[in-house]
Image (cartoon, rainbow, N blue to C red; front, side):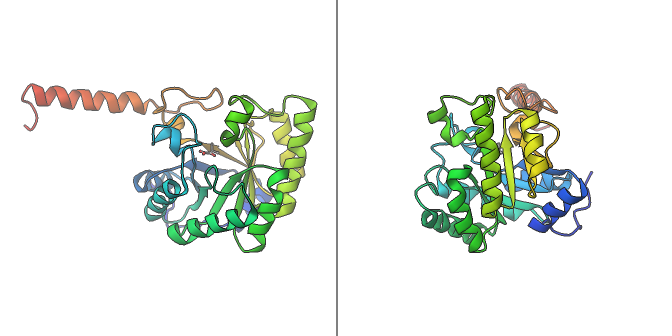
Amino acid sequence: MDKDVTAKPVTAATLMRAKRDGHKMIWLTAYDASSARLAEAAGVDVLLVGDSLGNTCLGFDSTIPVTLDDMIHHTAAVVRGHRRAWVVCDLPFGSYQKSPEQAFESSVRVLQATACDAVKLEGGEHMAATIRFLAERGIAVVAHIGLTPQSVKKFGGYGKRGKSDSERGQLLRDAAAVEEAGAVAVVLENMPHDLAAEIGRTSAIPTVGIGAGPDCDAQVLVWHDLLGISESNPPFAPAYADVRQMMSDAITRWGEDVRDGRFPG
Ligand code: KIV
């Protein structure tokens, strides 16, 4: 059932108001126009064109091979499919880490080629200068701390972050630094729930949790995990449907109908 798609467009100010009012915002990844339309009609507030695109759609085993051109191609499709949601595009690995200027050039390409609303980048304290550089030039930036999949080779896996006292301290500093630098929201991925809650209490910008517990201002999931299309889900991302099975059943039945002469009828 379509939810209020005639409602006002979601903006960065909407996200801040929602935090102030204790109203949970719904974020979901999307990679094409039809899923954008569907998610929005089901009440999703923010469409994140995540670089999880690499794993979910492009057949890679990490986000590292995803390029800026890939992100632009899919973000433009999501923007074409959407009406009111806020659309965020992930800056992929290698497109922003070199310098604030490189991040600015990549962001300008994304914003001009897709007309999306914001860019997201991974990193905390060490990316604060870059976030500030973008924010001061009028770009809405979402930060992403905790488990940062683009650093999988450095960390050696996708495990929980913030379990030790020193990692916990670092994540608190990361959250404070990205807020102070001008990020409009911060994604908290795979970290202890009490740590995410503490960040949420001390932070003026909305926290967006994925594997970070119930006390975040918003929640985000990956489309393929939520719908049960992924071959396996992370432990913190339950599937709400078995769409993989449904698709497989439909294709199998149609194939049988073709082979047995029932289709076309
Ligand atoms: O790439 C992505 O889908 C993400 C979410 C998991 C937050 O960054």
